[in-house]
Image 1 (cartoon, rainbow, N blue to C red):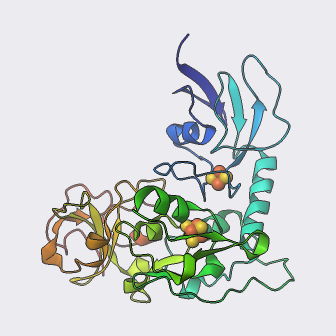
Image 2 (image 1 turned 180 degrees about the vertical axis):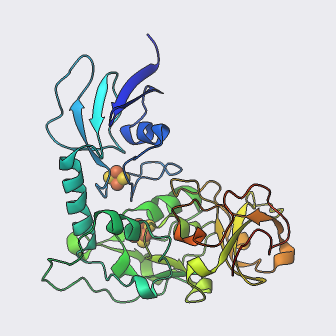
Length: 322
Ligand code: SF4
Ligand code: FES
């Protein structure tokens, strides 16, 4: 029997290997795939926390053509041969997604004007597409005692959506995880054990996987709105990681260094803390050229001649305006 199965999502069919989830199949089709705030391909066991990826299964499989009784999380549900899925074509899915976003926002401070993540925040994008213009929430929002988690990473617990990505990353990529989710229910919070600093090599990647502004780069705090900075692909010889990074420039100064992400917002190569925090001089890097952030990104707005075809070494190349 073939290891390929056929699934149809919003009227588009695709053959995928057995074991593929609905979300992965939708991403392979490449159009209108469900959003994901907790699932993260490079990290094992992620998904199933945020519920923004809910879809309707109108036909479970060729062998069982009945619909599934409830909406399902597409990041966890495996495709079956003959499965028919409705994502954006289903009003029920859109209504549920709007509801999930409303719940994600009930405790969120909505402080985008002062948040370093603004302009590259998945929750901001999600609220733009699925949010309400005003809140119906009357209760007080959650508050937390501020804790210092070290010299490199700023924690804003009020912005956290408890997706657990940073916890899985610290478990799977760093030598010793010193933070996690403590307490349960509406008092759950990200915290370090006994006020530890998060300083392991590779721990800076928790900044990149955080879908909101709960974990931001302390060395970049309030330096620039991201859409005024210019991202460049660059690399350096690094014994710990691939060294393939993105330099965020203001004039000739590097104001931030991050890992590179794919079009789903997922890190391609995790970089070490030395590349991220210790090499802020342009001569430490081989600059490959401007990074194409995709036309939808506010970071690209009025800045690049798209598509960026031939990356130049000159950091001023290809920009059409400051
Ligand atoms: S701090 Fe960020 S990555 Fe960690 S659980 Fe909260 S939202 Fe997710
Ligand atoms: S992405 Fe599927 S539950 Fe969060």
